[in-house]
Image (cartoon, rainbow, N blue to C red; front, side, top):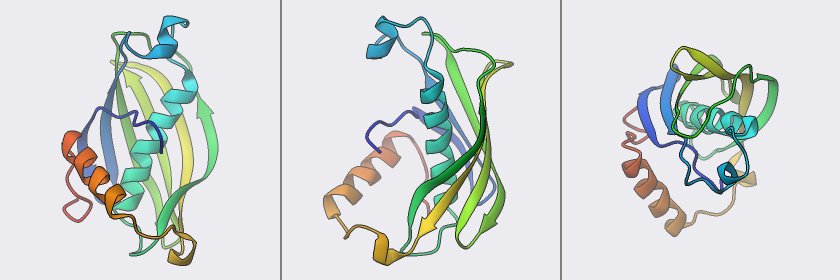
Length: 152
């Protein structure tokens, strides 16, 4: 993941639900040319929230990746100054992955909904451990005020 689109986690219930926030600002480069926050980035924020949720139930030594997006709809748009609330529920948790449903809202207005699958790949397909990457992940989790996956 190159860009983190989540500003803060509000809730992380192991294998059940994750809630997070994305604040849209004028400081984001693409908003200088666009009036609205791109739907693809709303989807990515939902996927990142769902990825963290799925990891809470992932088997040890596996790697999480997006398996597929079954459905994605964007009935309204977010704009600079909006606070997008991301809510993702685990619909089905299996040993090979988690099916998720997510909703992105600005207040009462839905700006995105998606159904997607996060799959777990066996450890032999995962990249070798990188202590520097693990340290950055821990720093990011603290910055997002997110509990460690073991605490969730």
